[in-house]
Image (cartoon, one colour):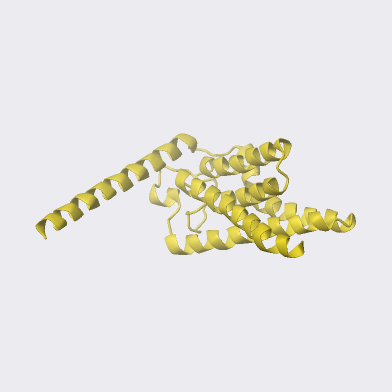
Amino acid sequence: MHLFKKSAEILFMILFATAVHAQNFDINLLKQINPKYPTSNTWKTISSTAEPLSAAIPFSMLMVSLINNNPKMEHKSYEVAASLLTAVVLTEGLKVMVKRPRPYITYPGEIFPDQVDNESSFPSGHTSFAFATATSVFLNYPKWYVGIPLLAWSTSVGYSRMYLGQHYPSDVIAGALVGAGSAYLCHWLNKKYFTKRKK
């Protein structure tokens, strides 16, 4: 019993030390990215493209498919839209469960936001939506000239959220994983159930 108690204490100390180290790395990296005056219009513009572009891409695909009577593209537009919707649900659910404060709230005077947002920090919604859209489009059109611009855009969105002081690096990484994971899940479900059924 004594040995078990001692082992549990040691395990708790290791986990606590790891969590503290990870948090220190998180905030230290953010301090290097976030300037005292995050006024760059470039990063503000990139950040602001996440939601409208994520919605516009599947909508545009749908419109083009209907105009050209292209059922295959129409089906792909639904998959991209489903990926985005899945990312939205998962992201908002995690924000409600985790309730992580924004970094400038936890570290006032050390992190400088472009604007104050009271929504939870984890995970980054902008990053999640951008990666869901980018990954889903690339899975449907797996060409380098499609993938590279989409990856550059979604990665830039993630960086912009840190530059603007809105998210920790771990928020952005989690957002990217949620977004990409949503796209892979919808692509897998589409191939497994809907595509086979259609054939």
